[in-house]
Image (tube, rainbow, N blue to C red; front, top):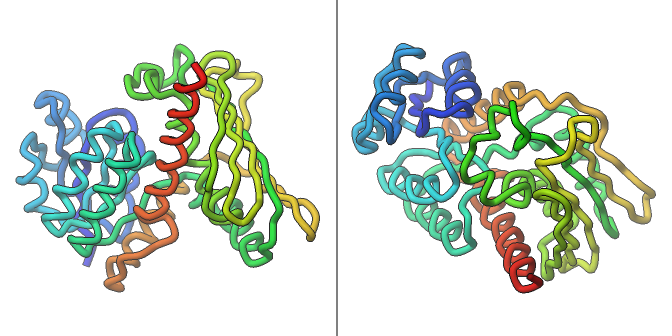
Length: 296
């Protein structure tokens, strides 16, 4: 039986990513939208031929799970309500915009005994997933470095009008993706330092509990010619870099939905990309933001 899904959100990502993937996936059925704006909610629902709701409880009554595609601070409010109603959660990154809010979501998920999965895009791309499996099996890495340089806040991008991205920048928008590679390979972080560059560029230096270190550069305001994503590790086995990959969001989302549906079908509530990883990534971002604020 297909997993009945509702989408929370009516914007570009909610429709072009989540709703599109859920409507096409053989293991899911898209049954409705929830949105804060009645006109936009009805328009999104009509596009996909499903019901539109401005009352979250009405959507939750019709579904088994929700895909949340709203700003992170709104997600942190909606997710606990859905978990309390016993609805499984396909979430976006970052989980929340503060460590405290992220922990509250995780507590609600645990209390509701529901499945959760955060869509860290890179983790569900086949090339990256295969590489991560190899390097985590190897272990013993001494450190790493990486960069995600993008132009999503430049004019013409569908994300350029995103208020929360404009306000929080690449640290919060792109940081979760690279941290989702650094944390499972190098371990928990015990110290964070950060520095700012041009535009919203930020540089992170992480000290891990294992003694390993990692340097990450994040930006959503580089020229298009400078765009690119890389991440690499070094240690006794030498160096290992993420292989080239197309940034195919729908391919990754299809894989994430399949893993999520399998988890729900098995009655499982844990996954390598569940809310626990969300809490750990937000803790690093929160610490970095506080460091930047203190540094002036």
